[in-house]
Length: 575
Image 1 (tube, one colour):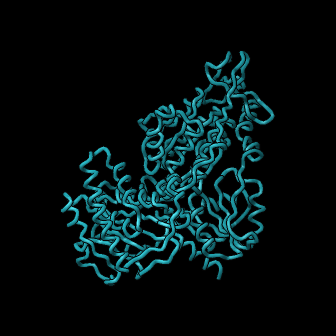
Image 2: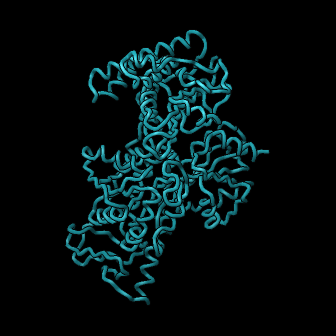
Image 3: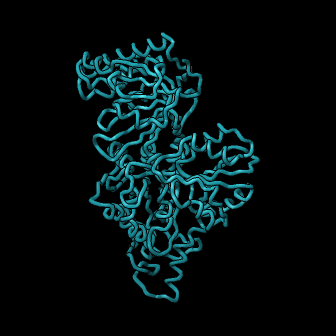
């Protein structure tokens, strides 16, 4: 059966500890180096061993960057994998499996099954642990990749284990490759996708890596964080590259210590990143207020996951917008970004450092598990757009840290740079930074100075939301953050001349023209991964837009939206 579609969805499923991630890494590397566009993401339980996990790899002639429900090829690593993904299988799904896993499995047609003795081949090579690599070889054979590419990928992956392990893995791969080739030659399964040699030179990043790269491009030279899924990857990436870029890494004892160390780093002239998830950020909120009254820059990355409390620690959500928007006691300006693409994550994180420095406020980067764990190939970044803009000054003897100015921005000095005294405290203060309880003049003026910086932000840095789809739209699909790619693909596939997407990568402050754009639509619907419509509530508060409940599509299961889910929404709204 020949697949004449634009892309193929491969799903590897098994228990934690069975090597699902290894198969993913090897296949993604081989297929991307072979000139195929790649998107990959994973769903996994919060456990080290057992349970049921799966990885989806989309392989395409065209660029792909989001999740689909359908499974074109399933590689089960245990018998439980069938029930785990059963709802996603169809009569068109092909299952490549070891015959030992088929006992007791029903509802599968014989023509759907390609039975390969992965375990026996692996044992012949030297150990059953090579079964996964045999499966990798089988897929590579079906896609007609060059075995030399696999040799390079396997060598890089297993270089620390010695030449014998590399040779055994390559032998296992070749045996699987021959099985895959036979499937194609026998006409049982063929794939009709084109390749592009330029893809091999493109970069392959996930969301955490993009945030980490953006931080490095923004001049980050300090990070203090406490590991917490799904944000830990950003800390790991920056730590892995810390020597090359001169970055100090501090694994803090807890999130309270982490936020305070990051504030202290900015105070002394460093550029710091606080990276955490919702539960960790809950502990940081007092520190956010400290940054607010000190008018101290800080950049905070929150990789969202379902709550409350520990919730579903390895699943996805968009539940922390309210937390970022209202975190901290008292009132002060802030910026909240929510990148929807890998490119946006890089450029917005880099931008966040310059904005935090200039406006002396907290700047948030909101991602989620879907975004930080998903990855795809993209062209190299345009580094000509990147500039580290430091805003602190060399102080004079009469320096006033909190000097009243027309735009609310006081010149920021750092200790030891110049002749002035740089005071900082958590109490209300005078222009010189001395504690005061003057409620007649100083207090109201300082509150206005801190809070009304947001008016300056609206003039200078508010980004317009992006419109994708019909120019003369009557229906607007509003989304934010990681739902960019899934809504975009669904709208393009749906092909209506009346429907467009309005994506927000800057959630606060909203661009001044937001209300005008929304009012052009006869109907506005919204897609979010939370139960209360948190961004819909922001639009109601700041744009006087009330979206009817029937037009709110709120997913709070912990699962991500699939392209098919959004297509169903579009079909429903079009009728």
